[in-house]
Amino acid sequence: MTEGHADAVAGRRSGREAPRVGKGRAKVDRTAVVSLEPLQAFMGELLHSTPFAAERLVCYGEHAYASPEVMPELHGLKVVRPGWYIGALHRGRFEPSHALAMGLRMREAKRALSLAASDERALRYLKGETLEVAESEIIRDPEVNQAAKGYCLVCIEGHPVGWGKWHDGMLKNEYPPGWRWT
Image (cartoon, rainbow, N blue to C red; front, side, top):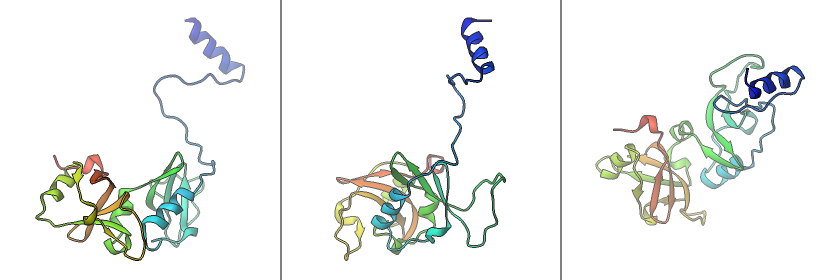
């Protein structure tokens, strides 16, 4: 037995856990309280109305879900998804999910980009490429004086296909890597 291994075994026997080193999954503290302020700020900044009731919001770790209206108690059960995956709350910011984008309509977003199916940028978006997009092409709510910078809903022929992050003429692609055309 090596010295490091002996120390680790002795540490476990004495009741103190040795720190994990190397590969392995970190345990998620599902009881930790996550601030929903970034999610609320995102919804206020990007959506005309919230597509789900606030009381239906369920958080597991840093992942937010909108549960169905009639939902039985899930404590003690293992479930794949307790509802519609809204996104993740990472380090004080909110990252919207692709499922949220697919569940919205273009008119529900305050910032959107609508591409024609014949536009070569639509195929480039589906391939995961960054696009050059003029600020004038970003469809914004005329009642809200808001910069084009930030997340915008990307649509093809008016149907949502995912998110993009626009900044200074460039639309960073947020299309899921596993769904990209090759």
